Image (cartoon, rainbow, N blue to C red):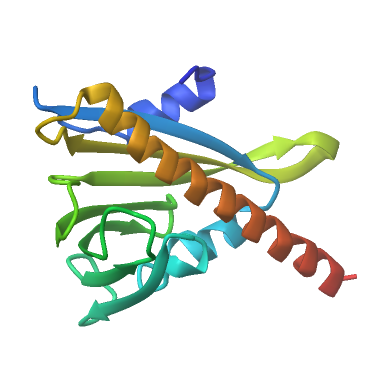
Length: 180
């Protein structure tokens, strides 16, 4: 990923992962034509990832929605998994940062941890948009290479970020229409 100076600074500040020899890591960036408050209203819903993540069919959170909360996620068919158990590691409404860790499931994403951060930015026409940065670290499964593992996880995240952008931008249009 080629990041500009601003993106590199956000990555340096918010996307720290301790990488072991048997792990891979990557950082992805998405520019969304919607204000941060709209994008964050979707991302922060640890209890409803299916709102913008197309591979999730159902989610049930155990206990209150707070750091340490665990969610059981059902994965749609077509992926090499049916469920995932995930723990909320960080939810910062001021800085717009969410971190989660996979703690179980019937998939090969062992020791997976991700951080997603949102940052306001100016987009064409002088409008406010959102810079979304998502990074992850995960064990490389036996029989796979680091490149194969990163490619697979990046493909899932790119799909999620595209869906997040599409849904956020639709909400932003509705928000603009409703206020005029």
